[in-house]
Length: 394
Ligand SMILES: Nc1ncnc2c1ncn2[C@@H]1O[C@H](COP(=O)(O)OP(=O)(O)O)[C@@H](O)[C@H]1O
Ligand SMILES: [Mg+2]
Image 1 (spheres, rainbow, N blue to C red):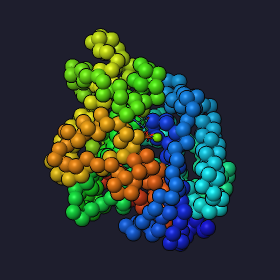
Image 2 (cartoon, rainbow, N blue to C red):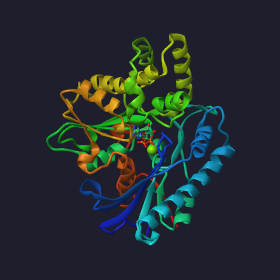
Image 3 (cartoon, rainbow, N blue to C red):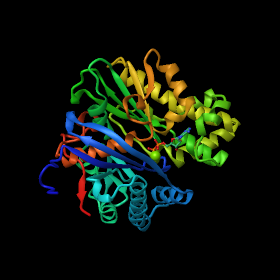
Image 4 (spheres, helix red, strand yellow):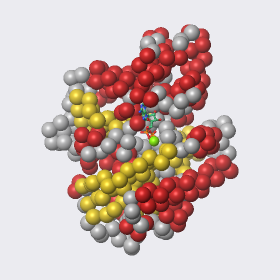
């Protein structure tokens, strides 16, 4: 493979890896991709989420916590995760009767441990930065497969938020001549890509609406000793506490103008601690708290749609993916408020809800290997389009 020349095979076997803010595990998608850019076509060959133990989850949370993380911790985590992922990839290949040599390359998002898209003063200089760990060089050496990683840095270097990046892939795979579409991913954070029908690339816009499952997951851990509210069973039993909900919706992020992106820093531990204090003050039963958190996710999306999307584009279809797509409380809430638009799952378009983001990073790696710019300045705010990612050899 000559890195200075575009990848010149028309069809590649590519692995996409995604480890999102939910810390539920590593998503591994093996995708056959033919063509690139607007001609991209894909077939998902195999998929698996390799779950994280509670111990790994705790390590990552501790390393990423603003007050507790240390450079030693982040450095160790960078190698540790790359090793864990390498083993997971090799096991995945074995289970699918494939040798590493059958895979052309891997696209790995990495695990975000820090994301500061708005420049803040640092040593007298306004600085924005983002850090995804799970070292691509280690991953490449240990798997024997070339790895494209560090997708976000280039966009941020050009003044962009470095996120979200999936909207470009949404544009490649889900644009429509007839329908105005909103593509909604319910991961730890929820984000939406708006693609008006017949849109040119520059007309796509996207942003993070706020929490997806993140607040609910924290409550499930803290109040019910579960990893998440499976199938919305807890939220389904509770009642929304309107006063509390109103207060939660006062969070300034919800009123901030897009483009915008967010993460655990805003909707993680500190947010949830505040929420638990409010619960005590207002004497809200645990189930009602979960129902309220679910409604926070629903209404932050619905309000964003009313404020920033509908005035520009009347959406025909909301295409939902991510782990939150398994939660009927979220889906029913969305369907009810977004009517008359149709709310449907991404699998209707060949993208299983759990695999979509990992598939997206396989596609982004394919774009990098073909030297195609893959950021959308209209989405990230970067000053120009640019090729994303760095390549590590085995
Ligand atoms: N059966 C289910 N019922 C409700 N929620 C679920 C279910 N399966 C997964 N989830 C939610 O999805 C989350 C994982 O979603 P994912 O798309 O992987 O997010 P991320 O990209 O942040 O890792 C879990 O933490 C959980 O909140
Ligand atoms: Mg996940």
